[in-house]
Figure (cartoon, rainbow, N blue to C red):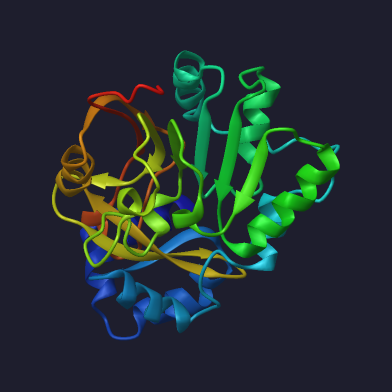
Length: 283
């Protein structure tokens, strides 16, 4: 029954029609969406519009103690949760790119989950450096966890502008949550770092060939604006900073279904590897 209801609300013309009936969308939000993890709701024209809509339902943003507790385990003896299939592509590229002395900038890395995965697979060794930039709640718990683990190479911060220079930048499922990652209203990600890295690995990003939109995603204790990127605008931003697309992969384990908006279904997210030319001498 749940599958049938999902098909009607998210993938059919009937669902689109129901969304136009006054009160139906809000009733769905209050009775179904509000209690679901990772579910989406509504379409909006900007980050600010989506943020205002999310405020009407819940606390807004990732800087939330409840979410941090889920993503950053307090028990250092317990490894991070089993990671997603698409992250093997990131691991594969890191096996080829990492060199002694390299620095990795991990934007949105929570408590250093991917750092621990790389350590588990033997990809990191001193004098490599790994710096995580995330919201204060994540950073606080990440620092506490890795102090207990006595992790030798990882550091944390909350300000991208203050992050150390890096050879490789990771954005593993974070770009769609940022207010202005492409620098359309102010400094974007690449305008905010000290130096442009030679390589950028991005995973779990929603790209569309026909326009863009914002929605909101529920995490039970908090809700977040979530961007569906225009593929052309996304690619143009990195190309304008001297990057070329070296690889891309699909993320089959993640998709986007928005009730009452079948036209904005995204069947899978994507991952990309950008390489900058000319490659810096430190690469």
